[in-house]
Length: 363
Image (tube, rainbow, N blue to C red; front, top):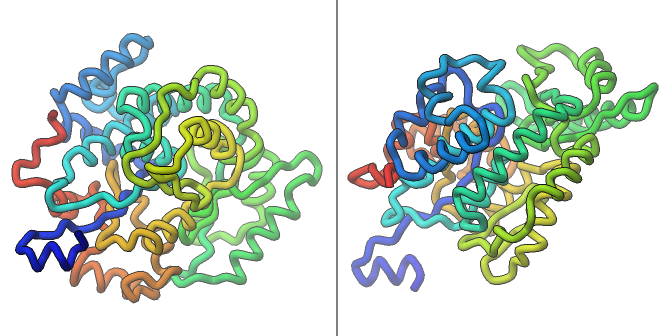
């Protein structure tokens, strides 16, 4: 039965939503306390804490409440990644499924792991194990780093010539006198480059200063580049494919490829997640565009913590011309009239997605 048939029969059709899961860097000092506020005392958080305690690590409840925020501690991969996942999971559980139908799930970088749980391809506890293991392996190796730089103008309009110049600059730097430099993430109106110290230093020296850019990302390794080959090998050794299964809703990966409930091979999903996804560029922009084109959502929802992924998602949608958006001003005007992009890290936008009780995160 389609939506028009439902309305003719007097039923209220659910709104179609695309879920976009956040990646590293979204849990910062401003987000400290979010997890306890949203999910303190929940059964699933108690399980997560027990898993952390058994692994000899501080619990998420402690990190989010008793331990004052320190970037040097909370920003470490083995803590930051599980905290982000748990906050996002609390938000996902709170969405009113009687009013909203999840059509597909995607994510940015680490958000791919969260997407596995959101789509039902991994159980929540298995996802925590995956995310905790990957965060620890990344932190231990900390191979290289990342620098982010915008290629859209101040109004978020694409500057395709600048984009090509930035990619060409990275190609020229790579391979020269020990420099390694790669495209790491295509992030809406920004490019994230990953490389070794020599490559990143040469890049930042040659990029024009622009507000706070070029920006070096704190405690980020060169994710999605060949510098993660060692992490990939160890991850595949530690993490087997057994927990993986076909998703319950479609997932869109970092290539724009769709994993469907009816065609997904769990072994292939494991192979991508702990293979190409780790060492090849992650095209977040393509994932968002495919999600909009293929699943025609009424709204796009970004779980918390924070709302930093909202700008990059809006920039990708502007490139697509979604909702008639052509720049930052038209996006903001559209959001004022009828918000189509909802960041759950923003209280009033989160409230639009909750059930009347708003208590499902405590189950």
